[in-house]
Image (cartoon, rainbow, N blue to C red):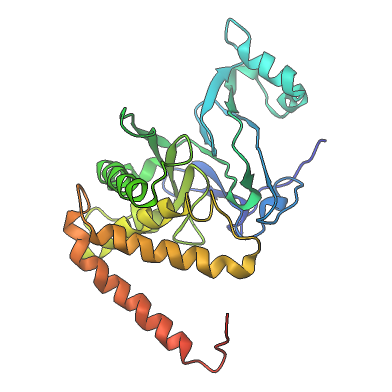
Length: 298
């Protein structure tokens, strides 16, 4: 099937953003709750899972990111590997969108395990990339737009992720269920973050817009990462049947993220006391909602 659809500019589907600092274009997806259908035809509901395969063609100075690990080819490779990928998938026709084949990078992603469509992700752009390959953990990468590189706390983000993975694996009695953790700093983002399988997207306004951050802001920085990592087990590996149970998915991840933060550990220790102050704010919010006339039994 050939299916063409424009980029979106309303922060759902496949959103396009042009950085006013350097006029660079960035793309990222936001499919929750049901916006995957805006990018390709699918049964867009959480209880229908499928294995996903993806090939992304993009300018060679761009990086493409999705849920699985990718292999990258050039059409000008001596072995013709990139062209073989296109031929095997039957998508050579896509080359017509480019003026010259020298400018094209082909990104072939490994097939995902069975996942819900709302957890699928596609991101691309001229990102700066920071990498962490530690034999004790799954690989990590951080993708950030070039104009915000100086504000990125990449070592802190890598460290919080490792400490949090240790805590969750120990608590749940199950290893991290996917092959990598990519963190994509996303501009003009609709939410705080999104737990796409193996490819977490974050609002770059929250995560890397300031050179100096207070302890309360850094605590929120920490808890956002921990919240999204919790979803890898609760939400991604085990998924609600329908959206009316999303409250349980989100509430559990929020509760566990503050528990993880309060446990401290490497890179998290400075925020363990502040975590419960944040949590008390959520508790007051919940109690206030519970007093509303619109309150109803679950």
